Structures are given as structure tokens and as C-alpha cells.
Length: 266
View 1 (tube, one colour):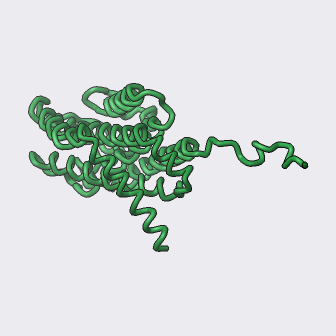
View 2 (cartoon, rainbow, N blue to C red):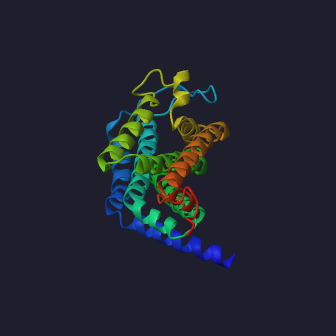
């Protein structure tokens, strides 16, 4: 048990160091989240923006700037989490493969990356909720943190997938950027009058959007939205594990492949 713990701690330390060295991502966390949320509050009109929340059937009428702050927070945390995990996977892929080929257990590497992702997503979700609560108080702040956390985790897992399968950094960054923008913008009632369409159920952050809207503007349970988002998270995490396992496989031929006819006789 002590050996497994030591392997996990070592891998986790390298994963966290890799995130800490991503200074641009740290800058995004510190500045992008509050600037985006503050601009939404200042520039969007305060008049009510009624819409029907599909998950609960409720008709909510929050202020337009409050509504945009929630969608802005979702967009910010998904972008940052996806970007950080993509960068860590893309730049650290060769190192992970060398570790795996040297005998380092892939399970410990994956668990360490998941632990680092969890810490990062929890921090940015809590930070985004705290910034949002400066001007007004969400009805269920802890549930809002949970919704933002699940959305960030989902995009973090997608970042691992993109970092493993895409060959150039610009491709992964563009993919994460466009998916997050389209995903959240289509579900914003201010920008899309059909935000309660059944098609929205297939978007990656649908459950988190439903849960965060309910948590911010009502006292209704957000369990349905969180359950949907956890399903998306499970699928994305499983896909990330598969591509990580494939990327860190041993590319050298096995002993049987090197000697297909068996050992030669002298």
C-alpha cells in the first residue's frame, strides 16, 4: 500500500507542477474570470429575461445581466479547464509515455491526472461562484459551485482527449474554444430564443447549464441537471482514459513478434 501511495503522490506532484508552470492559464484564472463576469454585469441591461428551464419546467425571470454572468462563468471555467488539461496532455505526452515504458503504472498516472484536474476544477468553480456573488447572491451557491465544477471536469476530460489525438497545439486550442462558445451560447436564453429546445440535451454542458440556472435563480433541486452532467463527465473521462492508454502503450515489438518462428536451433 505504501508503494502505491508513493507512486500516486509522485505522479500527482508532477501533474500539479505542470499546471503551475502554465502561467497563461494561471493568468486566465486570476483575470479572465472576474473581467468576463464584471463586464456581463455592467454592460448587459438589468431588465428581466424570462425563459423556461427545460429540466424543471419552471419559467424563471432573472435580470439579464445576472443570467449572462452565469453563462459567462460556465464559458470561463470550461475554457480554462479544457485549455489546462489539453496543454498538460499535449506537452507532457512524451514524458508520460517514457514513464509508462519504464514500468510506471499507468493507473497511477491516470489517477494523478484526475486528482490534479479535480483540484483545479474545484478551485476555479469556487472562484467563479465567489466573483459572481459579489454583486448579488445566487439562491443555492453550493449547488452552483457543483454545477460549474462538473462542467469544468467534463471539458478537462475533453482536453485530455484532444491533447492525445490532435497533432498540433493550435488545433486543440481552436477545438476547445469553438466547442465551449457554441455549447454555452446556444443555451443562453438572451442569445437564443430556442434555448429550451430538445436538441440542447445533446450539448456537453447541458446538465451543468440547467443545474447552474436552477441553483442561481430558484430553490428547486438541481439533482437532475447534475446527473445528466455526470453522465457526460463519465463518457468524457472514459474516452480520455482510452486515448491516454493508447498513447502510452509500448510501441516496441513483443518478443513473439521479434521471433515469429521461435528461437533458432544451432
